[in-house]
Length: 414
Image (cartoon, rainbow, N blue to C red; front, side):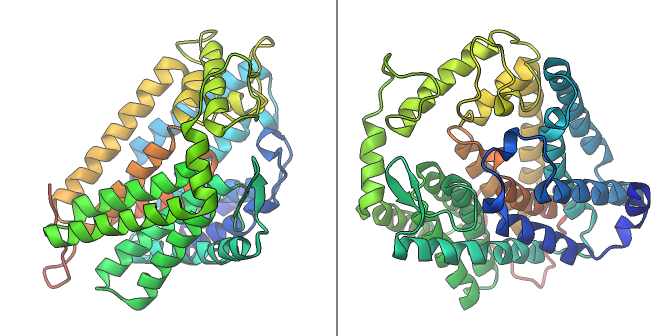
């Protein structure tokens, strides 16, 4: 059955398939069990992941675009998944994270191999469509105080599993909508969607998510706008968002709480007491201790998520809340070095496209920059709907053709 599906995958309508996968994944994110990341059970999200991987394999066999890069990334995931099996023993739980990360790669592969069916603007529309419902629900939750209580603060989640998860998706959708608004020369729909997703990001009261939005918009303005007037306009927009966040009761209280963070010896590792920065610092301290057990190759992909660490210092209590620490523990210095090499190559590829006045590369660069900042203090790649949307846009940008001489071309600053 799987072989047959792979063979017919290239003939499937790519746009509806990707749209349905991302919309369903975004709409059902909050329905997953709270412990699903450390559960070996099969569910809807796992089914979507497997389908995406099978479709991507079929696309690669047919079009063979980016085969070497995909083979390299798949080999990386495979090696460190095997290491997880060595550490924890074979189970669905042991390969779960590897499959999930391959499904993120699969979304990018599908977008990259289907430029004739999937234009970059269509990819943006898919991201917008998948996020509209969650954004409206997030604003409704703010107005009715019906969000999720996180550390004593009522925060919106929309239809996502956690406010931080929602914030990253909304930040990506907001930046993509801003790009579409600029490309369409101020089309009202995209202006309204930009404001909708910005407001939805604010309702989550996620400091990392809000900072991610600011970084994405600032990066976009730097590379997109040539005139000082437009850059000052973008700066004013960023300042306006910041003021709006600060003047809200929850926003100001969160900033004040994080500013008072300290690494007190009395807190228990993994405790959720105190402010989020304090327990993050404790969590990272425990992760460093975990890394020391296997510093070169790590303990395997996903081991920090399922708590499969040494018996003396289990990391099961909380997720890492830093992708850099997570991959250091899971893949060691060797794995992180390969990851950084891959990121450098991706930035170089996007830079080449920006130098050729390719507007989609500017948005892809902005999203990637924001996610790298978010990854400092968040579980960025574990936010699967947001990761899918980023992979979709980056893959489509890498496959995007240069604009014609008669089409609108933005001004760039290098």
